[in-house]
Image (tube, rainbow, N blue to C red; front, side, top):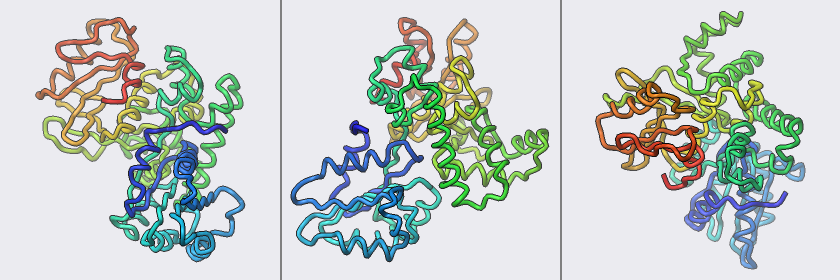
Length: 401
C-alpha cells in the first residue's frame, strides 16, 4: 500500500520530537495510526538515525509480551552513537509496557512514539506511570478532504454521498468503493477485531449478545438523546433485562475502544454541563452503516451530524450539545477563547424549517459565530440575520474554522 501523507498528524508529531516526551498516538484500530508511524519513519530516516520499529500485530514480535522482553529487545537494538527512535505499534499488547517506556525516555538521544487502541488502558497507565512525560495525539478516520485524496475523487455531491456511506477507513482506498461486497466484508472484519481485541479481551463482559445489541441500538440512534433508563426500557421491551449501571459500563467500553464518542449536554443559559441524556457519535460512519444496514437515502441527517461532529474535533474543538430553555443547538464548540454554535439540517425546505434552525441560534444571547449546515444547493442564500448558512461540502473543505 502506497503511503499517502497526512500532514495534519505527521507535522504535529514532528513538532514534539526532541522534547523528551513520549508521543502517544491514540485512536480506533485501522484509522491510520500505523500509517502515521511509517510516515514518520520515512521523515526521520537519516544516517545519524537508528529507527527501531516494533509492530505487535506482526508475528515477528510475538516474543515481546512483557516489559522485561521489551527492555531486552531495546538493549540489543539501540545504538550509542546514533539518535534512537523507538516506534511501538499497539503497545497495549505488552504487559507493563509503561515501566519500560518510562526508563527509556530518560535516555539521551532517544525519542519514543507509541500507538494504542484502548483509551481506558492508556489513560490509566499514562497518568500514573508517565505523568507529565507524554503528549497524546488522536488519530482519526479520514476527513472528507483526505477521503477525496485517497480515493482520487473530485469534490462533488456523488463523492459526498460515498463519504457518508463508506466512511473513512484508509484501506478502503486499496479495496475500491466499486467492490461493494469486499468493502462491506472488510468493514465488518475491522469491527469484529475491535470488539474482540479492544473490548471483549480487555473488559469484564458478561453478556456478549447484549453488548452487540447495544452497539447496534446506539448506531441506529445517532444524534438522539440517550439515557441508561431509556435504553433499559427499550431493551426490556425487546425481552432483554439489564440494569442501568451495566448499560453505562457497556457504553463506556465502546468509547474506550474509540468506536464512539460520548457528547454531553451543555446548558447555554446556565453555562454548565448536564450529566444525563447524552448523545453518541461514531468515529467511522462505514462501520456504523454496515451494522445497521443503512442505505444512502436513509437517515441522511444523522450522518450529516456525525461528519460535522468529527470535523470539529479533528480541528481541536471541544464539542457539546447545546441546551436552550425551549430548544436545542446541535453543537456548541469551544477552542481556547473561541465559541462556535452549529445547527445541522438536511434541507431548508420552507420558512418554518428556516425559523426553527435559525431561530434557535438567534435565541442565544451572545455574539459568538453561529452557522447552519445543510445540503441546500451551493448557490442559495449564505447569510440569515448574521448567521452563516453553509453547504456541508463547503464546511468539510474548511480546515480553518
